[in-house]
Amino acid sequence: MRTAKEKLTTILSLFAGITYSSWPLGYVLNPKVARSSLASGLEAPGQPYNWVFIGADVVSSVLVIAACVLLWQSYRKVRMRKPILVGLFCTTLFGIGTILAAVLPEHCVPNLMVCPSFTQDHFLLVHGASSIVASLALFIALLILWYQKRTSSLLLGLLVAYVIFGAISLMQALVPSGRGNWSQDYYMTLCSVLLISLPACVAVIAPSKKLQVARVKRTQFT
Image (cartoon, rainbow, N blue to C red):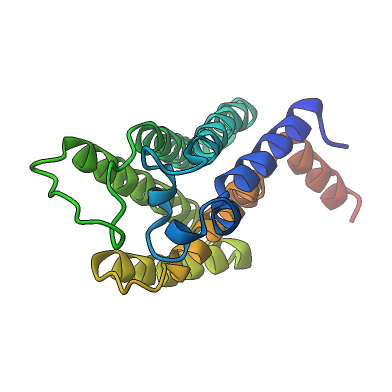
């Protein structure tokens, strides 16, 4: 039976993943931007309901950071604590980067208006750097966890999907087509899946002490 802390961690991760994927609301609250620009355009100043998308990113990040703290408290004494610490640190960095990108959004929506370069709009530079750091940090976290348990179908599936959709999303971001950014929608959904499954990913490489004791007992009776 799971402890109260484990249940709370699962709940935090679940709601972190759900709130991170706020992009479907864009097609209802701001369809013009949702269908023609990057998801970050939904948070731009002056856009309708931009506070919804900013708030969702901030809430998601706070929840995942809290989940990382609880996970570290649960696994800090296991044998694999070092890679777990690095993975959770990178996930926390993802949360911090996401918060910065949300509260310092782009002031211009690409494909809908002529936007200045980052040398003229410093918010664009900070927003872009924060988004890139967040994305790379979450990928590194997944990569570290996968490397510790390369036979895990869960970690391998997430890693492959992350690489494929992340690459396509980056291509569309660099070469906008004006037809929306559908791959970024999938990519954000994939990130949500990773956030939701974070407790399971950590448990794959370092089962809790309770589970380890249970395995020892089963071995003794066989």
